Length: 158
Image (cartoon, rainbow, N blue to C red):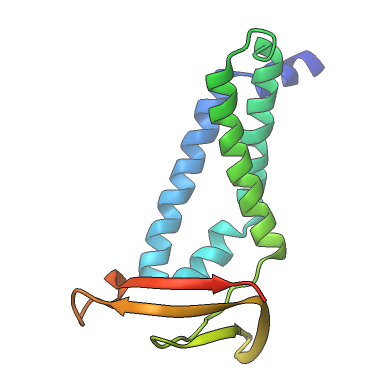
């Protein structure tokens, strides 16, 4: 039983299945986000315990393959660095999820601020940043497309 589980975890076929399921989950989340909004996609997919489990299994699978194939001893640096970068990205996403805050920082051209608004359960609270942000220049190729605006922002530590 232990050998079968070890073989399953370190299998390249398992990698393909996990990545296909992960890709399908991201695709579904994209459609949910488009038609239902970001909050629904975040709560249904991105913050789902199953999604975190899937990401954990992908990392576990990669580590098991590295150990099984003795990639460190064979000095497969390209493969190690590439997959290590993916693990680092997933760890960064986990840290952001656990400790990050999402809010809105309103700035007009030439203004400086170190406070941002956080909306939670219909209530808005203001948090202070350990640095200040200054909007130096704001240009937009089209008034109708503010998402394509170009910003020159300066973040200054106190």
